Length: 289
Image (cartoon, rainbow, N blue to C red; front, side, top):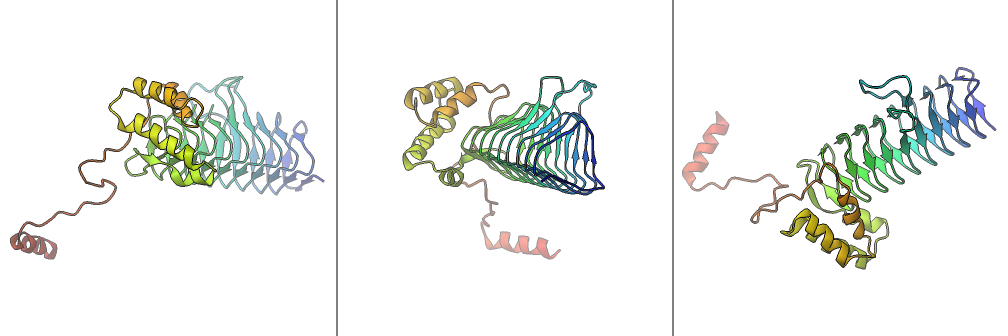
């Protein structure tokens, strides 16, 4: 049984499914569709041109279907389309496509955490986690099971590959290859997302193939073209093939691996080694002063 709070405004032309809950002070505009079993908590805004599939849960103050933040945005816009079983937390904003037929699309079973922003024409796959304060620019693509950590900024037209993990506060200005981890401090690739891949059920053999493909792409002296061709030859029926398929379509290039250096772990703060007692005394004097 559908329940609509008396303080909510639902436009008469909005299509509301069965067993929908619309809480206090929500606004559901015209030309919208709310699928069966959806739950809208208080102060949710579902703007014109938005379609929610079944069983989506929208938390307080989320705004879905706002107009694009773009100087060329006119009155004729695309839509926002959500699939099934997504959880949209407080203050999330999701904007419509910039032109008719160009939509912002979010798949199934995604979690968008507090104050995440999804820009116009962005495509998000299935089973992703987009955490607090993430900013996705226009035309971004996030593939299935990617994890984007807090306060990450993804530049317009960039893509994040499947099963990738982007560390907190990273600046993503090129594509993130599938299966890898991007370090939040350096915004560079630091290896495979081994923990995430194991959790998703990748076998030991598949992980071994991904490691070999990773070394070909990120650690060999081959050109990008040569490395992708080698991956295609060696892994024609492996998940590693998606490395080549994904990266071959890159328009902005892809984030490279962090240099390992000569025995130096650049992810850790380096300590200066004092050469003599005189150096130690001078440093102690500076700290005291």
